Length: 275
Image (cartoon, rainbow, N blue to C red; front, side, top):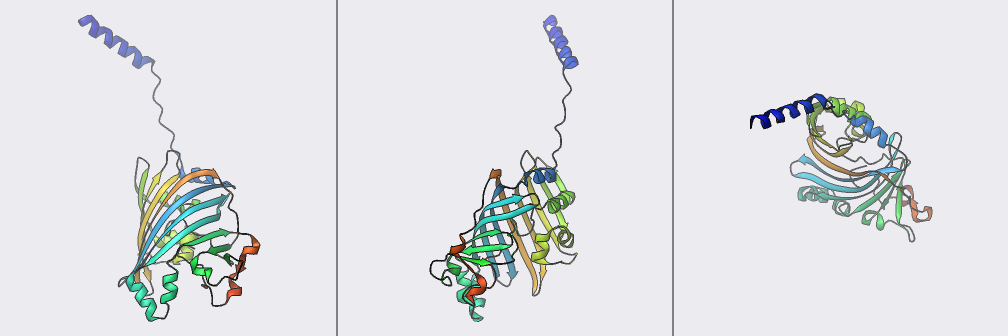
């Protein structure tokens, strides 16, 4: 018995002496991983939701899904579908202003193809305005839709700021809080939508990363100042299919009419809340 125990001890000792020291896995930089993914012809699929609460019972919810195509600097094109729902109080308020029909029509599904500063919109919200043999309304000089209403993690600068502002990080999940005014300085998407909020406003967030450092999900919420008080926003986006080859095709020119040609028959702004 003693020999067996000693023998096991000796073998164990030899194994320890001869074993190669374990090497720590190299730390992955999510910003570098994102920049590597920003290749023309490649894309990511998204599924996103947002709820915006203006108080006094006035709120809206929206869902969006589709594909975002990349170039070296980030998003260059997208093909996205979205739905929109207003609260009963919001619909009632719109009716008092004579805008009830417009508000209810905007709740129907909308498809938007975006590229080179133009949005091509189809769906019931524009169908009645379309001349025969056309299917799309083109809105000129538009911003590309954001994949997340608060945090556009497809912007390397924004992602870097979120990594710096983290409060905890474990097993591919990162949590943090960033001041809204600081976010506006690094995120063109946030600044174009919310302007430059006061220093008192914060955005809290959770990021989930894949093993190769790419964002799989971002959930964010904030209370931001508005003209009538405050706006509470919660937005959640999931990303999948990173790096798949995609060509986002624009509608045929013969199927398109410019918004300026439709007068008051079509919404003046791109329908929906993501653009």
